[in-house]
Image 1: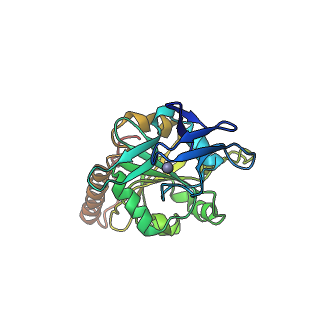
Image 2: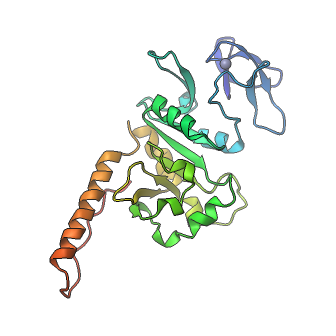
Length: 258
Ligand SMILES: [Zn+2]
C-alpha cells in the first residue's frame, strides 16, 4: 500500500520508515527498493486485505492522476463489518479499481458487489495476445458510444460478465511505444447487452481523468442500454417499412457525447 499512518499522519513509505496500517492497525514497514515502487508492507503476512494486489508502476501512474486524498480509501460495510481498501474513491462515491493481475470470477463479482458504484481499469498489456485480438476488430471501433457485435472476440473472457463498466488500457506504462490511436484510447465495455451486442465507449485518457471525479456515476448504464435498444427497434421497424424501396435513410440519432 502507498499510505500508512506515522505520527498520526497519512504518509508514503520512506527509507527506514515504520507505520501503522490504516485498515487493520497492524505494524507496517517501509519497502523502498529499486525493484518495486516504494510501499508499506505488513510484518510477516502478505497483506491484511486479501483483495490487495502487488502495486506496479502502472498502478501508481494511474493513481497519480487523482488527488492523494482520494487514493486508498478504506471502505467499510457496516452490515458485514468488511473493510477493503479501494484504489480510488471520489467524494461522490464512485470507486475505481486498477487491475493488473488475473482475478477469479467469484472474487471479481464479490468486489463489484462490495463497492457497488465502481469501474474497473484493466491493464490490457499484461497478456500479449489481448491487444492483437482487440486490434483485429479495429474497423468496428470508434470514439464515443457504439454497439459491438462480438464482444467476446475483442475482450478477455474474464471481463465479459462484469456487472460494472470495465475500461481497458492497452497503452500501459511503456513510453517507448509509437503513437497508436487504438492503444491511446481507453475502451469502456458496459455491462448488459443489446440483443447480444455490447455497448462500448471509446474515450480519451484526459476525458476519463477529468470526468470521473466530477460525476456520482461514471456512466448511466441503464439509460444508455435503453437508448440503444430503442434505436435498434426503430431501425428494425424502418427496415420493414422501407423494405425493397430505393433511397437512403435519415440521420441516425446519437447518444450524447461522453
Ligand atoms: Zn493491515
